[in-house]
Length: 301
Ligand SMILES: [Zn+2]
Image (cartoon, rainbow, N blue to C red):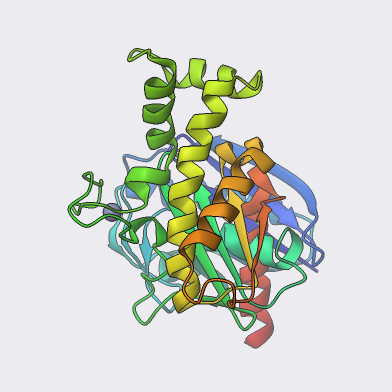
């Protein structure tokens, strides 16, 4: 049996047919009609029909950026899509004869890493994804933790600096303002002394291993380590999985995170040390995670 995973991005919708080992059997994508809720629904239905044609499929999962309710049914709010209190699960199940689950995209990616990637040998995992912003996912005792209302694990909005820099969420001092791709560009501009440096130029500096670029990554890692130290006080994960484009920096990113974590963790020297690992599934995490959450849901029915 297979499951289908759909990952809705700002510019494209990716879909994949996935087996129970998390392997992609086939995949496809279409442009994302983000401005119209109806066109988005039609596109998702089309992808699921295309991927399931002629294949034994038990369920489909849909991952999207936004607040999803704890029942994995309703999109309360999606920042980049025209969905407000959208009962997406009911609408899709009315059109497709499959059980459907809806999940936040960062949670779906975290679930994929836990099941098939960098977190697979652990039961308590915390994932931080460094993209334009900072995303998060929590696995506790082998289960995805989403909070009482479904809006938990928004780790990018953990406060690391009271009255600090403004964050897109309307508050100040969130780790997203210090540990995101946007923050990295700020550090790169400071380190190179070039206030006009753009994201592509920054990426090049990282690719060639420029010293100033590593210092910028180190600054970002230092902030991430501070966030992880606080997260360990609450969640005590065995492993932190770091994802997103910046994670390609590998040990240049992990070392400052680890050093900063050890310097900031409570009961320093006595708190068991978690592992810090780079995410393994990269671009496929969203579809694979959504498909496997759908499998899990269907097996309980
Ligand atoms: Zn914030």
